[in-house]
Amino acid sequence: NAGVMQNPRHLVRRRGQEARLRCSPMKGHSHVYWYRQLPEEGLKFMVYLQKENIIDESGMPKERFSAEFPKEGPSILRIQQVVRGDSAAYFCASSPKATGTPGELFFGEGSRLTVL
Amino acid sequence: EDQVTQSPEALRLQEGESSSLNCSYTVSGLRGLFWYRQDPGKGPEFLFTLYSAGEEKEKERLKATLTKKESFLHITAPKPEDSATYLCAVQASGGSYIPTFGRGTSLIVHP
Image 1 (cartoon, rainbow over the protein chains, first blue to last red):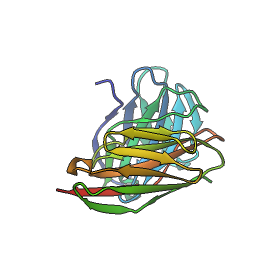
Image 2: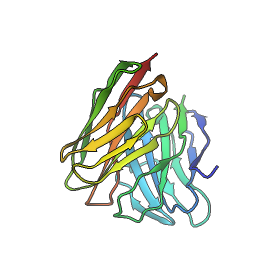
Image 3: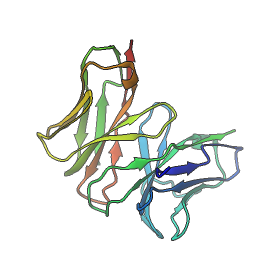
């Protein structure tokens, strides 16, 4: 499967625990976007990364949330000290396009986080 | 701030009953408008990219059109397998070119 791979698909955490969501982009793609989707709402942008660089994190809360895309390995979205409001579907998308070039995104199946 | 508004929020059709979904947008400069399809529990799947007013794209029973203020997704003679949520997104010419999504239109096609 050469598509965008996300894991875990489902994650259950208790309040105060940490959640780590992983995303491997499509082969040849070096641009990764993370979006959050709540029931009955659209996709909300969180962060845009290229290899080893955060390009735009304007949609990501300043506290408890962090993201990385190392030179080797998947992109990781990390949520510390989770709260019930963090329960959502988190989607990763990748693109081969350079910044500034219009292009479609290729999405993974999402990671569904439930905070008890 | 870029804005994308989709209507209607939900649409129920009988099989074979053609209709259109609307996506209205406000953006400083449009680099691209995208349509995606999302099935329950799945990630969005890319359908079309439109770049300039007057452009049209077709795929099976779907046709997307673009004006300077809105885009339409026309569904001709839909089938139950066309049931899904259809998302519209715009990519602006300024900033870091992050695609902004609308809330989507949930389409149900009854047999």
